[in-house]
Image (cartoon, rainbow, N blue to C red; front, side, top):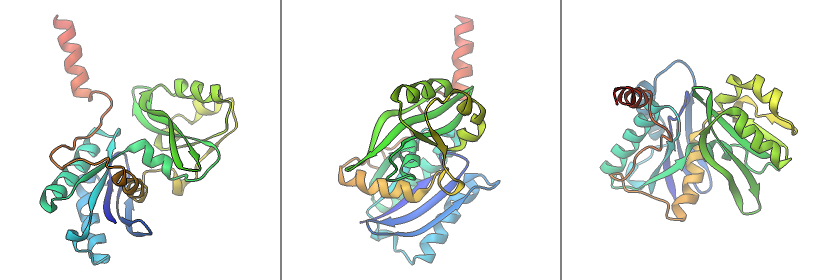
Length: 236
């Protein structure tokens, strides 16, 4: 099996070509570029480098969200365009699942955090067992203190990762009562290879969509939608 994988859910833009046995190519950029500038050129580059005939792929794995509204829309549009052009399925992978998969095999709990602003993070809680990654708390938007309370209640050690860790590091250090670590730089951001390898597992479980069906999972309203709702509430 061979997939193209895309992740533009956060500050990082990442594309990969993966099989069940190898990461054939991965291109990740986390430096002052918009995803509209980077994603397609990056994909074109790795396809050329890997001498890949796009008709050979079995599907497109995409970080479906949550994350940046603009980033998710760019990734979704790219995946949908490829899926429609190639007649291939989309494999949506929850963004936080992909982040947690960076830390495969740890005996600690895994708590990814993406900065969701408004004093919240997109987060969840995961652990590894013999049969793979298990979701203990499904991805959600929550206050940092709330997810830390849930971790403290488990009494288990944890690893934090994601761009929200840097933003809320002081709160994490103050509120976390269990033993904890911060993931190192090469593991603490989104990687398309992780999305792709999870995508292979989800493909085998038939967790796929047609290109026409696919849409990002935002988890909460955009700022424009929130402002409109507030205006309507005031007018009422």
